Length: 153
Image 1 (cartoon, rainbow, N blue to C red):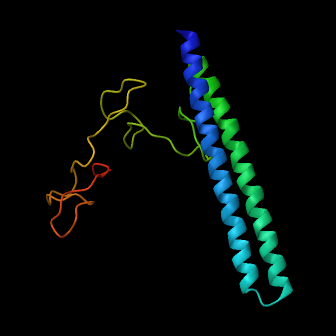
Image 2 (image 1 turned 30 degrees about the vertical axis):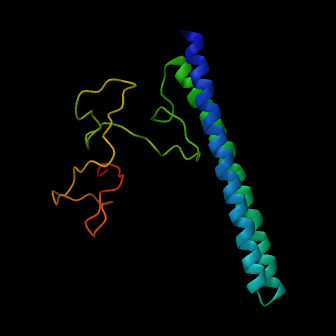
């Protein structure tokens, strides 16, 4: 069973690392495109140089975020292997910020209901639990069929 748990944790880490790499690649591409636009609209050589420096800074930031995410994913994998909690939450992050924590706690920090570790509550897609208007936020205002939503969350 332990080797199965390790395999799952390795797969989670790998998936999170792929997501971090993809996000980093998208950020780098976005920085390159923005630089090209800024260079085309620049009127002075100094503006072109600033655009290039800005691009290089954004690329370095994207690479740093990717490395932080990889480190965090490795720490989360190790914590899951050891059965502990890292950074106030368990799970993996593709952005490397460590601020995405999901919990069933209220303002006191205590669970608001019965909590079973490792079990997440789910809601059917497209259900309405919000304003009582009888319409979901994704419903077509012309009276069409409701779309798929997040259940009001």
